[in-house]
Length: 154
Image (cartoon, rainbow, N blue to C red):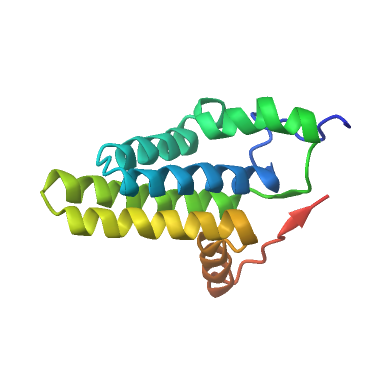
């Protein structure tokens, strides 16, 4: 496959369009498994992983690392897109999974599972259809601010 046009660890303004879908598939699947097997600790791990990727960088995000080191080299780089919408979606994942973690810690399991399933459903929707509600929310808010966002860069 062809070489990379963007370094996934340094060119943080863009991202391979398939990377967020891979991340969403991982997060969504693990969030669903957390619910099915009543693993109340797993949403905290998922929130931490998303937060680490957002703050320290993609090199420390395990699903990102798996995509960029194992998947992308075999299938090539996908279309590049603006990284801000998927980053915002990840931030929402941190907020909701963090809320789930807090709910579990406070003994409110129903609220914790509701938030976890919301993340699972939206992440799996994005992974399977490409419809990322967090990304769409970012674009909607950007338009409200009058910002023009370019969805994709080649």
